[in-house]
Image (cartoon, rainbow, N blue to C red; front, top):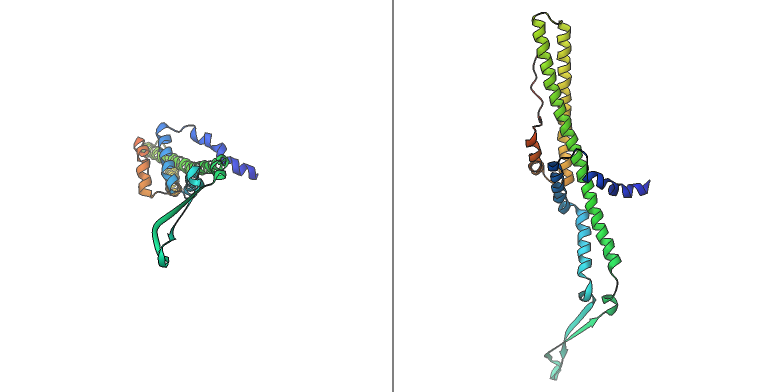
Length: 227
């Protein structure tokens, strides 16, 4: 079971990159959110710093060591204006095979990048699902309102009973309650996504605004209306 915990993020990556139903705009925004999250993730930055430090220590510069100092000369032990510079070249370090160490550090950087992408994508998909649920709930309220108006119109001409009108009003009340819950879930999903990316809510909304302009999502429950 522990092995699955290690390999599960790797197995999820193709599914995240090719999620069914993800529009081109939604996929583009996901990529932007991941790029925003990477420089804000401490584990990724540490892995990247370790890799860069290791790369800079390679080659002839990493194998060189220098020693400089002033020499005492002349009468009365005065310091002469002549200096010595001792440079040594560690051939063992120069020809050492660093590729395994570098590959390990590069793999660590890539693993952290994937972990960030999986985390952000998971929060992003939960927000998309919550947004769709809120839209569905808003459509449900509109449908129940239309149903109640139709029942009221029929009741005026004796085409239905007061009990049926009350039943329609109850269904509308339940639909409005579902919309309240859906909007609450949507707000929580937005906060979770902001934490996963490392952005403020206002900054995150700016990234998501192109999606909201495609089709409006109710962000507040409709005003209560009597039967």
